[in-house]
Image (cartoon, rainbow, N blue to C red; front, side, top):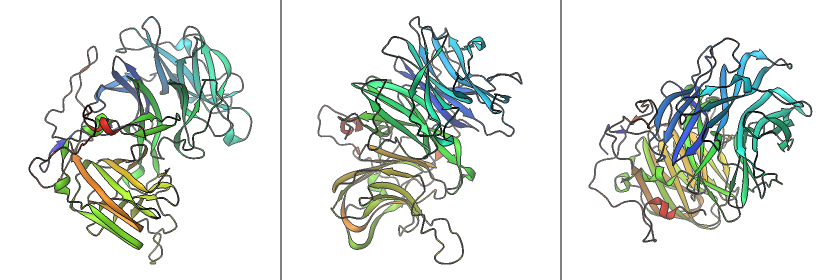
Length: 537
């Protein structure tokens, strides 16, 4: 790719705004990704739903406003928060959302949260609100915590609605409950027994449930133990719910993920949080950029997550030879060794590195946007002795002028950590990077998403500490140049131009070289692309 070429963004973010909770819906092969539009205005201006659609999981069509906020000062839905969509047997679409107005208070003195209803009879082009259907918390629940309605058809034939709710009594940080209401007509709802009541967290945000084969899955996000999206498994929607050994879908930065299925595959849509001041030490912010991960179901029912093959395959230009990252053995039985690429990586790329790791190795991993000697930059570190994958950086935050004040007691980004199984042998590390965002993947099964602010340029490397490994493969790919940023609107929806504020110029592009063979290999003659090698581990 030549210097200065424009490439399409990997992670969608609207111009002058951010993506909040995503409400996905699939129909006829297309994903309708409604999301909460966060403007970060001061004073706040109300939160509407916006919409993007996609068929290929690569090109996103931005349709702008989908569900407007209430306009009157006392409107219950000054903020239109998270919800869900369903289609009834007559073909009508029903949208349920959380209505909230910071000036409308409940008996506890806090802003009320209510369930609101809208319908569409023209294929989701326009929505009609039904304020007469709005209802609040049923007895026993806090009126200020009654949000994120998720509606699904239960095996009993009725519509069930799950809600992020809290009991009115009990320990303050353990009142969270997934409440439930039931309906026969999607209009009149009656209180039912709680769907899940673990007395474990402050609340369970964005709950959803779905069936996949013989298993049912309950997915929710919580912020009291950690800021993270978790899941549970059961053979029935009524439980009992089992806790997987590794029950998180990603780390701190990827939150409020909800899913939709297509052709037997399931995709989770969440947002990678931004940081205040766009610095690595800035406080986490609510909302960020849209990021999609595909779930795969292992034989035991547990879930593996990775970027969709369609997204990875969009990086079709192999630039491995130009990168110049050497293969071979790194040996450091009681020390440290690294190999660094000859050239800097571009702003947007996908890399895939295969390592054969010897038993007893204490740590190994990737260096990203590092200096020529590998000493500064980001570190994706895998620690077999601790069974974890973490993101670190150097230099760390300095706490003073003394030599020792280098945050040695903070050995990685707090919360950017994933539990992993690291047996000796081959491991595949991948990084999908677009300017200030990245998704790391281990063995096609464990992801770690994060913003990257402080180091915007640098090289790629592999390291080992107190051990031995072989760099078997080291590939880097880029996307072809984008020649047309305008996307045609879907039939029946308004025209638009794809939002381009996230487009990056590859001013660190690799040197030109003759065309090279594809980075993709497979032993299956009937398979093509990365889909041929992306079965669940």
